Image (cartoon, rainbow, N blue to C red; front, side, top):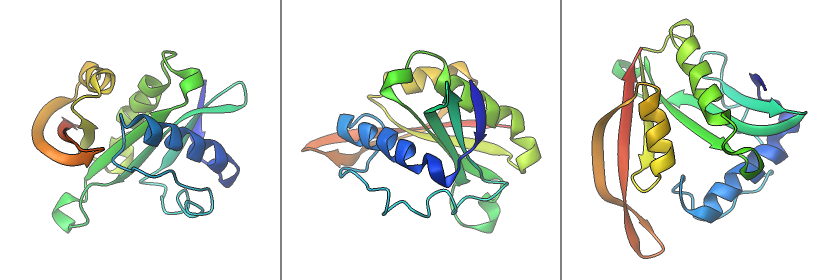
Length: 161
């Protein structure tokens, strides 16, 4: 597995992985699929200190992770939100773990003091993975998301660097 910066050529794979998450309703509040054209600037919106990485296995994008500002206020500049998605084809092969470990390992060099994951409370696999990597439950927003008529809780997991 190779972790590298995402490139424009990766965008179709990135979008396909994301749209799978949209379909399953397990890991994103986005309810409608997105297109490559709609996400054309997605990668370019990231900077060297707030990167967009892909994990590549056998020349295929197996998953991706973004590090983005948590809240755009000066006092939060060292806090980031992590988002990680893995292709159905490559699940259960340590892709998300490797991407998160890379983010944790490089956090200080990126000027990160705290990392936050916003995870649906029914996404037990993601909650477990984050907790295994040292994230703690910092909060819960009960019923904050409405998905197909069901209220979904949002767990806030955090880790100091």
